[in-house]
Image (tube, rainbow, N blue to C red; front, side, top):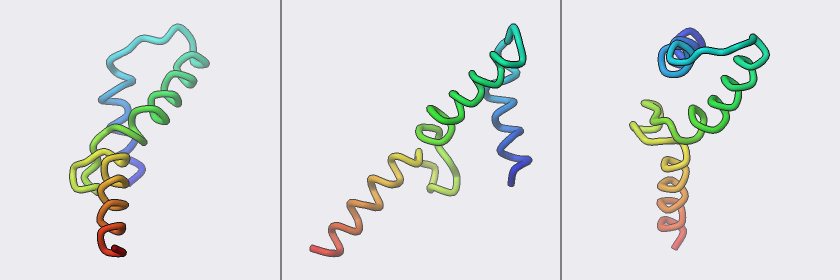
Length: 67
């Protein structure tokens, strides 16, 4: 699982950019993971939706069941 995640990060972000220093790379990669990969990128485990969309639809479904 971790290998696939790191491969995706390298293919989708790291290999498409140039960084001046390792520190810059570390900061920008961490920001990309936090802002995009973990929140907006579509994930197969979320039925092809972003985690935010998946959480919203799950919350709506739970609210509908409770009503």
